[in-house]
Length: 391
Image 1 (cartoon, rainbow, N blue to C red):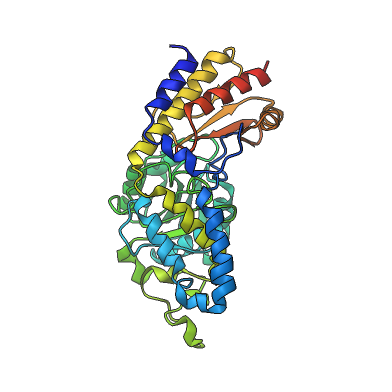
Image 2: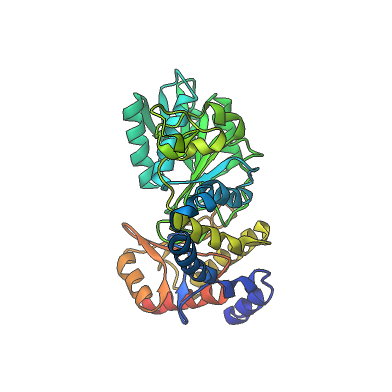
């Protein structure tokens, strides 16, 4: 079967194909950068017009007591099922970097007397920057290590391990169950960065007894540019969770304006500053797209899309033109990373031709496959355009 027929067959059998109509995508554009910024669900624009006109404009400050103040917890409850988390453990507040800081400091404080913070050597840069600051501020030692090498690194000195579920550069998927079990066996805490897995992979934070997790909402959750991040704290750790940013939003009685800080009960203590209401409510509307969606279908389609794209690239490009960095087995997220010495210029030309992926220095082409709106026909068109660009 040729590639065109194969793409048509796969798309005809796709149980998620109906969801493409839920997104506002430019005609003629193949969008393969949902792992950096998700496409906007159509319903968001109308919802935001109503929020601005009716809630902000019509109700003014009264809207704070008519649903705005509860939005961080309410939106967190919508994300919780995508994490495999029971209610009461997820709050949406602040940015990913801020939430990584909260989670790491909180984890260090949950492990008194332990001196080392271990960070995934291939971590997304902001995680490394924040971990360095946390080590300096808490008097801990920062240690980097490949997640494959954790057994040789973990010990009684280890306070916390900060791990990325999916490697942002290569797309490699790490074994959350195995890593979490190793960290716990050493008596340490684990913080998972889920930025490149939430919304594409079935997750089971509760079942795996993950301690803390953070993730952004503007990638595969389609919350919009700068949408706030989420923080997960396992229920039995919440009473002892002592996060360092004691802002008024996380106070037990925020409107009492008391001079002393008393943390809120439960996951609400993960909040800090005044919620970004417009972004929160845009995210809340975007998350409605997930109603009735089976994450097993999302995962199956993501594997199919990435496998088909690599097959197309392999067939259409001469051997040795690019190097596939992403694992070919199921140890991958929903992206394909290709190495080429002229990657930056190649990606610029692809984008000029309306095939939108991204470039990571020094030589990586990244293509992200969001199963809710990307088709196999898109994958084939992208591969053909790449072959044409590379001559």
